[in-house]
Length: 309
Image (cartoon, rainbow, N blue to C red; front, side):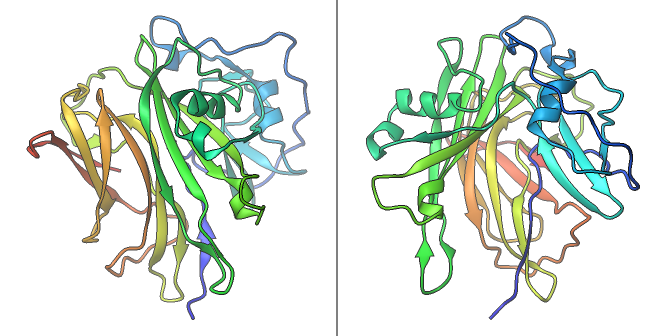
């Protein structure tokens, strides 16, 4: 029987982890009436929209830990910022991007299969998926977890939305009731959302970045990848930075592995959801990212671009 260690890698590019420690970060309430308005023209991703108080609330610091970025001096952060807390060699990751804590929603299977149900579920983290967000679709998978004698197969969901300024919301949710062994019909879901840019960008002529990164990696005693997840949504682009709105499919997997997963692309946005066990022996270290590569295809199966992450 293989012994497995687990780590979580954020979808947003991780910040460099600082070593050492600093003074405690003060806990502050969310400003009264404060809301995040992402439906705005211009380059919203360059504007400091998230107050430090919200960052502190969403990521309560441990005593004596430092953070990167340094929350002691920042007063605001742009949506989707990745914050790392560290003490010497240990660290944990927290994604930022909206005003309310993650909340749980009770859902029936019928509700989850409808657009209205998905909108309600994905609004739980505090960024309402109202009429200003166009629903692009969802992808669901079941993942076998738990012991061999008492396995569970919780449902994992990825949904995508986009607004008129091509701000993309990737919503990830999981059946917490199944994970905790609740009775059938009493499932409740926890969801998170992340913001990304779905508009054309000026590219340097290099291979475009893949819209997701591997997460939930587990490693065997031999130091190879045992399993990993791919979850999220984001734009697929060519080497010139333009969004490939005629793309239909994204095929993506770890570099060196023969197993690739296929995901739908809607209006240039890939909706990614998969749990993967590589067939190749891919060695990795916890402090180093595992490279990902993919191919973007049109509806006829023609290659439009490649990506690397």
